[in-house]
Structures are given as structure tokens and as C-alpha cells.
Amino acid sequence: MSVALEDQARFEAEDCAALVLASFACRSCLKAPDLITLTGAPGSRLATSKCAACGAMNRVSMSDTQAFKLWTLQRGNTFVHFAPQHW
Image: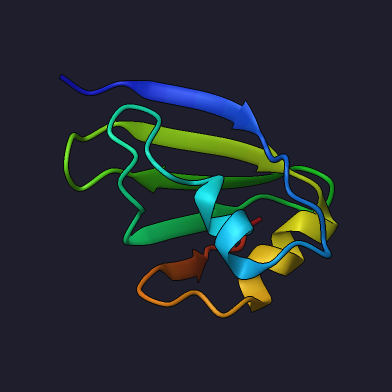
């Protein structure tokens, strides 16, 4: 069964990488994502991840500052892909 969950990012620009990545843990089984895809135009950023273990989809909307933090942090085994909008 695949579940789609939508949320608002709750981390700040000053937060450590572990806390930022914890906000993308699967809400069903708590597994860390392997891939986070970051999309959206300035002012409407959206990060999406899918749990490899249970298939739950996690969509997190965030500010530009939060998106920049996610894009630039040291992520360990999690890959962040930036998919810019095409006009």
C-alpha cells in the first residue's frame, strides 16, 4: 500500500544536517530516504521523497532558505536532486 503524506518543513537554516534529514524520515516506518527531489520556482519549493522500504511518498513544502539548506548540507547516504522548473 502506498501512502502520500504532505507536510511543511520545520527545520531552520541554522539546524544541523541530521535534524534536516530527520524531517524527511518516512512517517510510516521511520526509514531515511535514499533520494530527495527538490522542485519548484522561488517562493514555492517542494521536496519529495519515497520510502524504499514501504513505498510511502513524502512531500514537504519549504521556503527558499530551507531549500538552500537542504541542497548544500552534508547528507551522508541521502542524495538530493534539484529538478528546476522548465518554462
